[in-house]
Amino acid sequence: MALAASAKVQEALYPSFAAVGDELVLEFSECLDDLKVSDLTPKQVASIEALDVFINQHSGAQFSAMYLESSALFDDPNWEEIRSLAKLVAEEMGWSSTEPIKQKHRIVTG
Image 1 (spheres, helix red, strand yellow):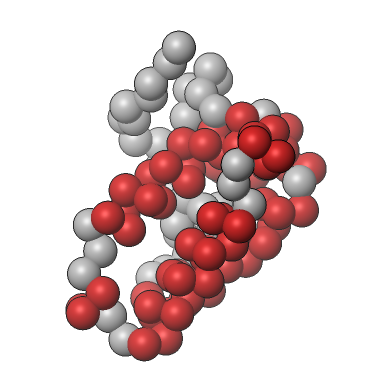
Image 2 (tube, one colour):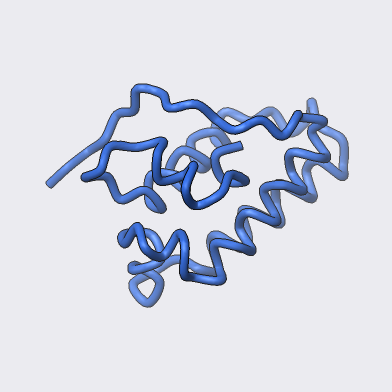
């Protein structure tokens, strides 16, 4: 749900020193590691894969600003696509569109 949230909500989920975009996709990746695909419908799997593929296609040095600069959450059109794809995942999963709440996060610095 954090990936589907507005840029303002996403930014508020983490401490001011965090690379919010990076943290969001790292948490998504961790969730994928724990995912049991056998428990999901084909449409659910397809929506998750579409989001994962988009993120992977937009990774690497040429996209570093997208993940490391908080302003990118608001300005980079790739974040709007990530949000759209994440909303499709939420719909397929049957999740209500509630805003995520700030959690205690493990942020690695330096």
